[in-house]
Structure formats: C-alpha cells, structure tokens
Length: 162
Image 1 (cartoon, rainbow, N blue to C red):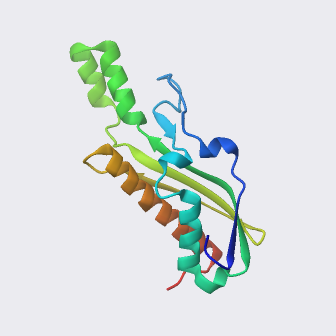
Image 2 (image 1 turned 90 degrees about the horizontal axis):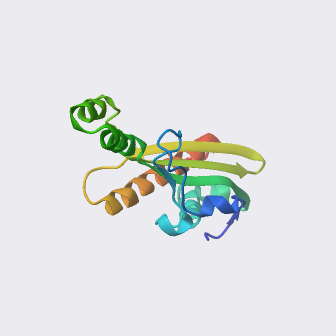
C-alpha cells in the first residue's frame, strides 16, 4: 500500500468471489459473471490505492479511504442471448431472431463506491471488449475501467491533478 494513505476494504465477502449470476436465459442477470479478486488483474484494491496515491498525491496523505463496494462484471448477455435464441429455435427462424437481437459486444462493468473523510463518492464504468483473444481483451478492458473509475472518483473529490 502507498505510504500516507490508509485504504480500508469493507466490501462484502461475496464481492471478492467469482459468480455466474444466472443460468436462466429469461433472467436479467443471464450472461453476467462477477469477477472475483483472483480473476481481476491487476489486484483491484492494491491498484486503486496506488492510483489514488499517484494521481492525488499529497492531497490524500493522512486520509482514510474506505472501499464500500467494488465489483467488476464481465457482461456477455447480448452474445449469450443471441446464441440461446438461435439454438432454441434453429433454422431460418432462429437466424431471423438472432439478427434482430442486440449485436453489442461483451463489456466490463466496474462499480466503485468509496468513503473518503466521510464523503461518499461512486463511479460506474463500462468498457467494451475489443477483438482478439478473450483473456487479453478482458484484462485490457478491466485496466481501462479501473483507471476511469479512479479518475472519476478523484474528480468528484476535487483532487485530480491538472
């Protein structure tokens, strides 16, 4: 942890564990996986602390930052529903259903809620996966979303360097 900044992790235990949120195609959480601490690289808590220290510098020295909520989800809902509809119906009808569904790419959805000196700030960042090997794209999108979330909360705190 960076010196001069105290980071307290008060996330619920479930937030640090991976979980497929639903296997039911009709459920609104179908196709969404919460990525646990072991699947998020870099380590989200250590990365958050380091980025806060680097970007806010002395302005956060001696302060306490409490992480209340910090999740990273991989959302493949559109792709999974498109596949499920085609598989369920099949043939020309299945193809028509597939072509009418949302063709959006999978994305990383990061939610962060912090308390800094009794001030609550939060950020939600969504970053589409690019093309190429999925593992590399997930890692790249996670890093971009973490950076954006940190920048957002620092802006809210009014301590972002110009």
